[in-house]
Image 1 (spheres, one colour):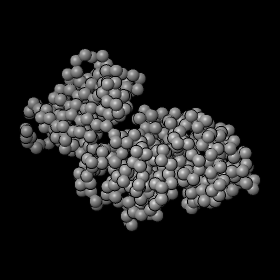
Image 2 (cartoon, rainbow, N blue to C red):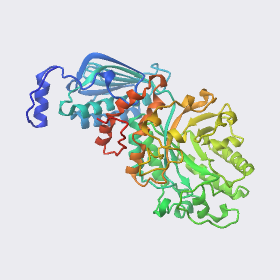
Image 3 (cartoon, one colour):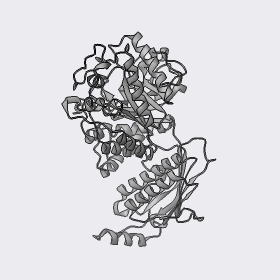
Image 4 (spheres, rainbow, N blue to C red):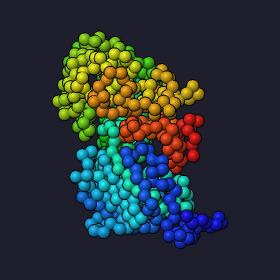
Length: 517
């Protein structure tokens, strides 16, 4: 390793001197010691070192329109973080001096699998699909940023070696409640950007509740004109036009995140009941609601207009939601008699299927006659859950005690609630979805989701400080095989990500559990 005399120079001059002082400047990390999150399936370090100056171009093999867009975004990333331009050499034959992005249909049966190879004069990112390549590029980006943050003006090279990687679960999700408090399109996009860093691939959008209706329904305009005008605490609320929503859907899709829309039914519906009197059994509109109690509202399941309303809502949202799922809620409908609830759900589930969506709902749907393909989201402590759930249903784990990002970290946390207990960083990470629910058939579990309910969350900084760093741990649980995950190792790697978040101007909870670097 070459050593440099510490003097004061302009950054550019210092960099030039450093690069000429030795042929192969040492990287900040050896590849298998780099603090990557999620932890890859396999990392094999080599003795090779890749000086940043060795890379001058980027080429694609098997390119399509989406891959071309990803390539352009990566060129911008490389320029920002290395101050070097990359020539876009799509059809170049020689990979020396280049970053090669390759779609190889024979690479792996896993859609999101990728291989990242760093040699002394080239980088290769290979995947079966564009999505797999995108995941590999995110690993490369994380390696660049972490090396830059640790190396500062000495960031001159990347460590050589090979990463072979694929996810454990196909569904690795986050949920954002925009009903209790409303968040702008810009805030949602920013959250999506952060989720994509850690390979999260679903964002569940809780679009309606007692406190607000947040999505334009053209056939029922008063839902937003009346129901969208307030939020918890009496703020001005807000809503997304259908154009806003399509913009969010596309932005997420460009980062390989699928939006899951939720309209919570038949409870959690006061905003709708305040907007349209005919949805109430007594024909009278309710008052708008700004509190946080639950379980007091219900659509009138005996009225045919209710099902006209439900079908119009599902149809309009399905038309602008290309993802496979439509979430119909179903939780905490305490004032709806079980017989009526089941009758309502039978009709509503049929409507979801009519518009070619897979039904999704909170686990309370198990009382109804649900189609086998229905995805059930488990959220509460229910001892008999595994005994009554249909054996063919798929399960998404969102256990409140482990997954709910709105739970306080500890008794001193100013934001959040604590009805499911405190959720420190270690507890949020150190568990396994396969063993959380006793006697549940593990083959039914398709992944996990980290909901962020927003009774106490009012702006993006609030979102960030409650989500980060816990959601980073959830991302690793979803991606990395449980046999590879160890709390001590994760805590060490996480300690470097405070710097990454700070560089992005993202607030996070600096818990004393972590020895932040």
